[in-house]
Structures are given as C-alpha cells and as structure tokens.
Length: 415
Image 1 (tube, rainbow, N blue to C red):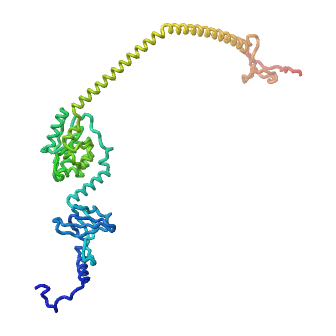
Image 2 (cartoon, one colour):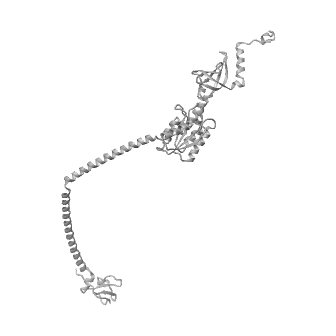
Image 3 (cartoon, rainbow, N blue to C red):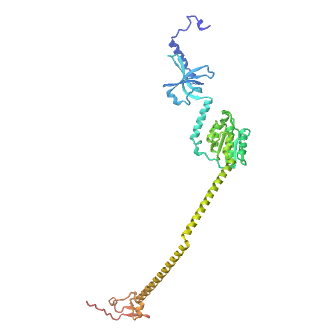
C-alpha cells in the first residue's frame, strides 16, 4: 500500500508550500552530518561575484552536481581557490533557500585532492626551503676547473649510470669514477639517496658529485622532491651536479644543487671539461704567450738600439772626462779650505792656551804670590774678615804654611 491508497480520514493534513519547504529546510539544516561535511568532487564551473565565489562541484562520474558558494569574507582563509577542472575536497554546510526551493553547500575550506594536493605540498615545501636559502644562487659553489675524481649517485641498474660512464670515457678519459649505488624510485628511495650522498662525503676523495636518474613518469621522480634528499644535496660538502629526468623536468633537488644539467649525459659533460677543449685552450694560451714574448723581445731590441744611438750622440767619454776634471778641482779647493781652517784653529787654540796660563792661579803663585784660605778652605781676600789669633793656611809655589794672625791692618780707602 502506498500513501495515496490511505483513506482520506486517516491521511496526514495537507501542508502549504512554505510549510513543506520549511520542513525540508529544518530536516536538512538540523542534520548533524550535513552541518559539517567533507565532499569530494571536480570543479565544473566558477562565477566570481561581489558577494563571493559561486561554483559547481560535480561528481567524478560527471552525472551529479551540487551548487557551492564561498562567501567573500571566507576566500582569504581557503587553502586553495576552486578552479575549473581541478579535483578538490571541500568542507561545508548544507543550506536551504526557501524562495527558490533549492539548496547549496556553503563552503568553509577547500583542499586540493590527488594531484592537486601533491602540487600544494610541493609548493609549500618549495617556499619553505627557499625561505631558508637552500636555493639562493649566492650559495652555489663553482665546479673545480679540473677535477680528478667524480662520484656518481644513481641506480646500478639504471641506464643513467651507463650513459654517465660512456660520456666520461669519451669526454675526459682517465678520470677516477666512484659509484655510490642508491634506489632512485619508490618509497625507500629518499633514504637510500641520502645514504649514498653521505657515503661520498665520508669517503672524501671525490671533487664533484653527480646525482642522476633517467627520465620517467612524474611519480617516478617524486623522491627527488623529498625534503630529506633536498637537504642532503644542499649540505653536501662538495659541489653537486644533478642530471634527473628530461630537459623539461625540474625537481627541488635540482634547485638545491650547485649545477642543474637536467639529464645524466649533460651532467657528465658539465662536471668535467672535455680533454679536446682543454688541449685547444692550452694551444691558444701557448700561442698568445708566444706572441706576447715575441713582441716584448722586439720592443726590447728596439729600445736597445735607440739607447745605443743616444750614447753615440752624447759622447759619454768626453762628458765623463769633464766631470772628472771638475771633481779634481773641487777636491783641491776642499783640501785647501780644510788646511786653512786647520791653521786658523791651531792659532786660536794657542792664543787661548796662553791666555788661560796667565789666569791659572798656579802660574801666579810661581811668580811669588800666595793663596790664603781660612780653616774652612775659603779664600781670604779682605783683612777685615779675619780676627786676631785666627789660624790661616797659605799656599805657596812650593808647599803650604799654617800661620796665626798676629795683627790686622785694614787698608782705608779714601774717598
């Protein structure tokens, strides 16, 4: 029996349109699950309005669609903005609009799903590592001009390892090549690559490290976007050259490397200079040096000839003779002047000696004079300064007398 088969007496009372819509609204909006629900779908259309972003979310089979809106105040809080063709997961609340008798999903958050989620994680990791400076060009180390030992981190089964060996033999034979094997695909690849790089660093013999893997699907190269691998490349103590995938591929490990060559073969050719190029550069430098030396010798010879001609014109022998004669004249004048000054100095010395002799007390005493001193050794020059019976010492030309004053006669000076 269907509801339409019920007798009219027992059938529910009829509702108005508004009553029915209100019932549906209360039923949907009060449902605990529909108040906060995650929905996965593909964005099939978008309409950026002044009030917010309106978009349709279509089921993956393309048969079912739900209307969605992210209000303007909420847009800045969304992790990603919905874009047509992207698969996303949205968090929202089911709302009913009675005027149109319709419902839509009010969206509070939008997250990428599948490839979109990977792209978001890749972008966030790239921005964080870039902020730390791991990709800055100023920290890139130059490759050695002529490395003697090359280390290679790759899979021993990969074609990249064979390509690198063949390229190095043809490009620069005689190099020492160290191989540090690693898994370069799958979940265990990041740890394996990090261990291989650390082995090379611990060994310490390599001048350059090549991190290589051949081309493949995007999923196969994901290990080179792993944070552990990127940090191992950035922190490697020797310069790192990456040759990963094809020319169009660029991983975070490429950005952290000192040189990105994109392919294994290009990495091998970049890591070391070709012997042919080195030989060509050597010959060019030798030719340049030969030209410089030749020009220098020609210039020196021209300068020598020019100086010889100047010497012949100057008659240096005559000039030297004139200089010698002038020096002899100056020598004679200097000798004569010195002799004159010596004679003058001798005469002045004798005159001063004679004068000093006349002033010497000993000379005066020799002529019959005497020096009189008191008991303290002071010279007595005035009779008024002594007293009767005072002992005095008299210095003669020969010997000394000790006398006693008997009488004092003071000479009167008339005015």
